[in-house]
Length: 415
Image (cartoon, rainbow, N blue to C red):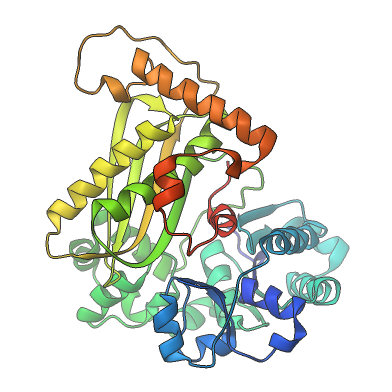
């Protein structure tokens, strides 16, 4: 673990909304939201009224009657996000991009060229503002976890450098929700045992956290509360999973809602898996209910899959199981699928027809191969004529278009 603060976390501020205000100066200083039926992103002016990403548009308008909705310029988001990451890459090759608008960087090996880490952070911020016209906040610390927290503290449009000698004093006074892995549900659970700050978390017995959050999560948060984080910058890491999610507002927990949404997500993921010839063995789904509680379920298969319909059917079974376990939950706000344990350089293996119940979901059976061949035909048509040239009818006719596909693509993990 580093003994000096050389890890940077750079995060473009309210990125999508900031781009819209950049493209249309008349929107500057006004509360705006990207989206329509669902808020995809909100400006700081809108956030001041309580408007947040993933919120239904109707609720956002109730909180902020003067809210201005814009449809979004997705190609500009991609272009400007890439340009900002390139600026960081001009200072160090050790850049780990974790989303379209944020990245980690290790500048330990380039201080002789560009100065101290704080000077490099200032130069990055100045260049992004001058060349792209966008605000960016940067945190500088000894670990990735603390650098990310520092960039959040620095917002909006700021710089925070955490001295290793005072890092625990800085960290322990902050609220627990700034920690990586503490979402709304975990925050509530910690509050129930009187833990509101990271300092209070650091003094909580391990057995108490383990009982409350489970062994893995409790152990991880306990370590991070003392800034024990051994993760290094991974500049060229091979993806270990592919996933996509859809914020659907507040919809009934019924099949006519979740089936087309899951098929749409499976279509996105399966296309990327097939393009890279990297099918996966573990399918995970996440359902978030209206009260923000999330439930995750997964299954690991005997053979890796990349066929869209097989992935969708497995995801449907997992969602049905979740809903059966939570009969009192009647409203869904988000659905997500991910595929992990990806195979390298995998070839489809034939399987004998044994009359088993799950043969339709086995990639090497006659039915499974037919599904894979149909997907490959769809892939070729889309490669030539575009994504909208062909698709699954139930998705095209049934899925809510409140979240544009372009935004879904930006939000998904890239292989």
